[in-house]
Image (cartoon, rainbow, N blue to C red; front, side, top):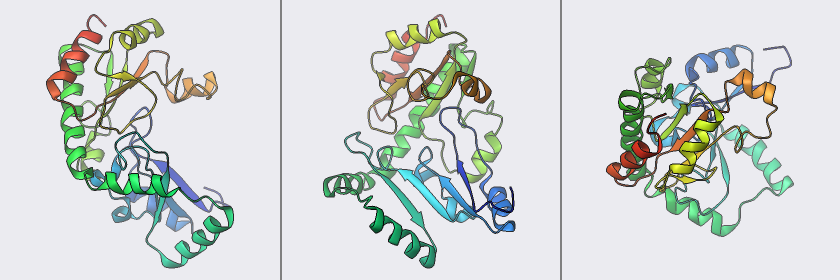
Length: 249
């Protein structure tokens, strides 16, 4: 923080390492300095985490992900609970012309009608897959806030009502990661997340490929890291695919 700081932006949980920010503490730091707290809540969804209740001023979502839930539109939304700030941002929105198309808006709104049902299944499948990876398949490191092994498990439980379906797995080497990606069948190879279908990706060469290698290393995004987005399929189908894809890793 400096005297020039006007806002703090946090993503929690983070992509792809599932790090958790204490939102109440972040809000306190921001507000003491006269700054805003902006929260990217995409990974948690509003069903499992409500940043306004912890002091956030602006909440962002990629509507492409859990809110839409069907991987058939691209969009984003900023939520505010202050009328004056909303009016200021609304002016900038109109002036800049960053307005979603009507079909994209319809698809996002349609998705919210089933958000509660989908998130429960994402969460159930996420827990089941994470436990399988950690307890039976012996992955080097399973990163999922719902596991007691996650260093911020207690914080996640305190400010989130569920953990969702996002999991990252450290396999140690790029070759091991490539082998898993090649064997997965139910989990489709793709960059997105939060849809009804399960996806698997390699952050270092996909979502975070544009990040310099040195910066990825500082963040902990290794060549051996694989990210899973657990969809809403039958849990047994996902568990069977994970078991055969990760066997021997």
